[in-house]
Length: 253
Ligand SMILES: [Zn+2]
Image 1 (tube, rainbow, N blue to C red):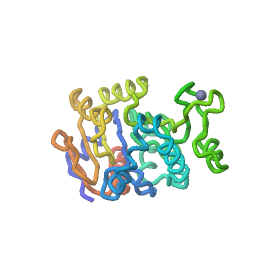
Image 2 (image 1 turned 90 degrees about the vertical axis):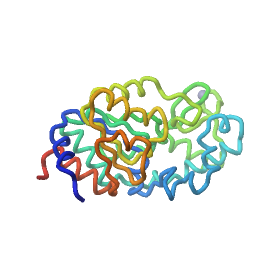
Image 3 (image 1 turned 30 degrees about the vertical axis):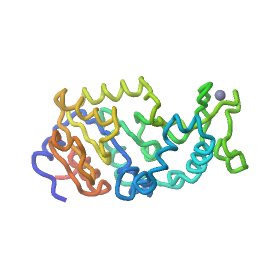
Image 4 (image 1 turned 120 degrees about the vertical axis):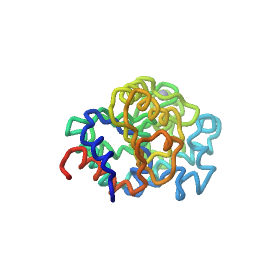
């Protein structure tokens, strides 16, 4: 792939890079995205209800379906890919300001990234909606496998859900504050594999631009922020991101 000279220079000169990653970074690991051509919600719009908090609380059938969906999630057997690995290299170089992710699959951490801001939470834990108890998800899924279709909280009997942010749920303020801070204090903001259609995650791009950062978008489909980006790359993420990181680490001419 051809990387424009201006982009090479920005990558080399950047001292604080903030990355926002979305579902597109994990599709090479076999995890389908939501809104792409093969997306989970594109192919089955009713599946979006499983991620809507009102439906989840009021409809036991939605909860039963959600637990089966969690148990069968491809992330449990997925391995991180070259793009996840590239971001580990970037973090170890000391020039990653923050890695903000919309993904719940935990693959950044599996790859070796340490400081990950999971603004939409994680599917690797369950959380009680009543008392807040957190339990490793495999423990709860073992109960599902053993025949409990909607396993209640072991402490208070309340409804449990994956520790993700469903539609209608507020983001965790401390995580969001840290992400906004990272967007405002970087000199290069790299949005990778996100359709940039979900707020407030997408708005981090504007926070970065308004505070003087270059905005680089790597995504297969157009995004609403392409017009304000300094560079937009449509090449496959698994190839593009390692290349961009190598250029920023000056390990490639
Ligand atoms: Zn509870």
